Every structure is written in C-alpha cells, then in structure tokens.
Amino acid sequence: MTYQTCKTWRAALVAAVGAAAAAGVVIGNVYVLLAAIAAGMVLLIVLRRRLTGVVEDERTYAVAYRAARLTVAVFGVGMALVGAVLLAVARQDFTSTTARIGFTLEFATCALLIVNQFAYYYYNRKMSGCS
Amino acid sequence: MARIGNTIRRLRFEHGEMTQEDLARRAGCTRQTIIALEQGRYVPSLELAFRIARVFGAALEDVFEYLG
Image (cartoon, rainbow over the protein chains, first blue to last red):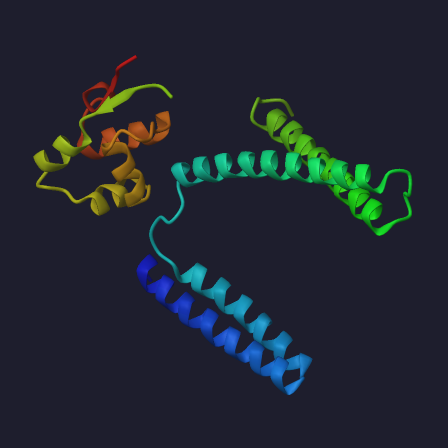
C-alpha cells in the first residue's frame, strides 16, 4: 500500500471511528465508545504495517528533533513563568486554587526538565559508545 | 548549517530523467528529502550521501561539494 492510499484509508478510518464514538456518546453506551477507539487503534496499526516504501527518514527525524527542542523550551519556560505569576498573585495563601495551579505548573516544569535530562543522559551515553 | 552543494538534479537527468520518487526509493529516503536536497535546504548525513552517490554510480565528491 502506498503512502497516498494509506492516507486516504486513514482519513476514512478516523471519520468512521469518530462517528462510532459519537454514536456511543449519544446513546450513552461507554462500551461502544471504547470499542470504537480500540478498533480504530488496531486498524491504524494494521494500516501502518501494510504500508510500503519509506515514509520516515533522517530528515523527518531532524525535523522532529528541532520541533521537540522548541516544544520543551517554549512549554518549559511558559509553564514556569505562568506558574510563578500565579504564585505571586496568590501571595502567601498557598492553599488557594491559584497557588495550587501555580505549584502544579512549577512541579510539572520540574518533571519535564528532569525527564528531558534523563533522556539526554541516556542518549548521550548510547550515542557516544559508552555502555 | 554547513553549505554543501550537490549535482543531484543534473545527475537525475543524466540517468534517464530519473524521477525524484525513483531516486528516493532507491536511496531509501523520502521524496521530500530529495526535494530539500536539490533546493539546498537540507544537508544529508554521510550515510545518505553515500547511498545517493551509489545510486548514480558516482564518487561522493562528484555528487556533493563542500562550499565552506
């Protein structure tokens, strides 16, 4: 299956799964919703396996790398700033909702940077010949 | 980014007007990568450069040129 054919099938599949999931919501049956999502995931995997030809290469990885770096930078700085502003607005009332959201954002930023550093450490060792 | 020129477009036409799709398939990359290479917007890895040169049966320096 070529990439173009796969894209067409994928679009049709997404539409069908969306319709089935919506029907599940409308009739109030969670099993229909879950079944539609599960079937969609399985069919997407089947479609991907039937795909022939190259759809990813070093350029797409380079694009993904740059996008990931920008995302981490923007998201990290953004969350840290918004969290700091919320904490400043909350002043000393650390039990307020504003402060809790601020703390959540700050800790999420910390978690993001920690995961990022672990990933960097791992790939740095893996790609430098260290065992 | 390093400036590296290439003669991929000329070589494609010298090889029976090979299409970008055909070159991409034989070099193991996407057509978008071939387009980016021909337009000088992407510098390939050494491996891809060797694979492209091999498709044309040419030496690496006959396909790619370091412009500084």
